[in-house]
Length: 289
Image (tube, rainbow, N blue to C red):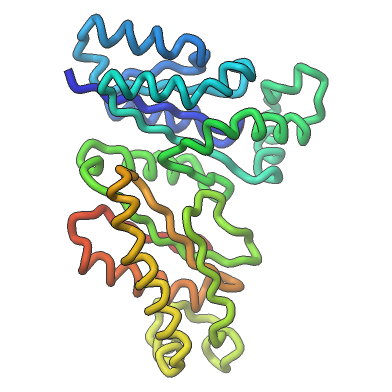
């Protein structure tokens, strides 16, 4: 029986429950808050029973697994993969400010505050404890500016059965004044390029509008930047594919995330859709959304 195991982990308040419920809706057999010490036995159980309902399985793991168990995570994953099980690790995170706001709104306790830690210190401790899992994640999702419906849509799009056949690329524009996306694999800073924001009449437009496009295309430095980023990605994307990487998040940032980054993100997406038709390619303009 072909089996897939999705491990959902991340910071408390970042959306793990939403992700798990979404996978359940996608007909995954889901187990919430499984202690890491039980994971291998769990895998052995559903593998030996050969039950159809276990074909796609998802478990969530959080920081309440003891520290020693978390340190053994790489060895455990290696043992599971040796059983010819397709393992996918999703890690969700958000900024400290976002997590504090969410706990304040829901009035729920952070799972590590029972040790007498203030909320900020509990979040910091949790991030540290889960560092081993996050470093092995196939998909990192920053939910700081993502609502429940957007997260559900993202999980469905990225993990639905029809999207598991090749490397998935996501190109994302953002504004540095709103923070760098935490789920980025590559970040390209284009703030050195001429800024349409300071050109009369262009401030209210975006990099998708013809007036801004015409402005940027007049500058050789913009074309040089596009060619440089494109060439870099053309060279290294095949290496990620050869390493069986499932996802690659590429973020392009300018000051406000409205003009330069949007324009270059659009161009890069268009280019790789033409030359890489077998890949799953999507685009997101964080600040425009």
